[in-house]
Image (cartoon, rainbow, N blue to C red; front, top):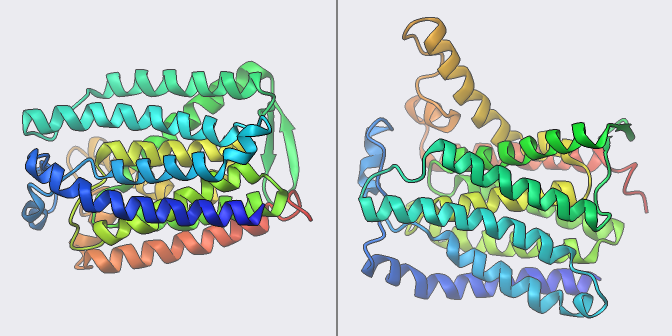
Length: 330
């Protein structure tokens, strides 16, 4: 079990690293550059033209890892890791369409908010239906630390689950705002799920989580400040799909509050800013939203923001492990 999990991480790391070597020049030749929002920090305009859609490199790396390291499990009829990868891939395709529209139009607007929501909701419903059909999902809402589960009617649970998935995916997308941020804060998240899988004997899910970990670490070689490439919505929506799908595959969606604390804070800062702005007729609570931009406006460098946010992610992922210790007892 441990061999397959470790092998998966190493394969994803190596393939992603190699894919990046070939992908970045291709994106540059295709002029697939990122259009920077004019209402963002002014110093971000220097990033204009940096290749986007770089998430393709870790999508490829993770795909290679789950097929190779998970092949033995597939022969035995276990396809859990493929379900999670397939679900995340659907979100990656939605992100790719969005990125493609932005690149071809040379502006920072792709799919409309409504189009994204409908596509994401459809993907979430399809995934949940598959998980229920495969008996991998229960309407029992596991509560970390208390080690109890609240039983909900299936209809209530599925509606709740669909909106949690869409919300989680978009929260990850919002976090992708500065060099290396969403990649860095997601590394501890992937490690958390890999540890849980190894601890509880979920080999196939461990293979996927380890692949996600390896792919993100390799991607950081290209994405850390100053970034050579951005993951784009292709990568961030895929990444959000990975995180959300893993939480539901382990049948503990509430754990997203802890492991995804940075995603939650980033999203809340955006919601609070908009609400406060409307309620006060133009006043702002934060210097700029989402939260990482607020700290940039306070004088923090991108590297400092990434470092602090990653440490917070590590701490809360460690707390999450403590929170599920009773459930994942050896």
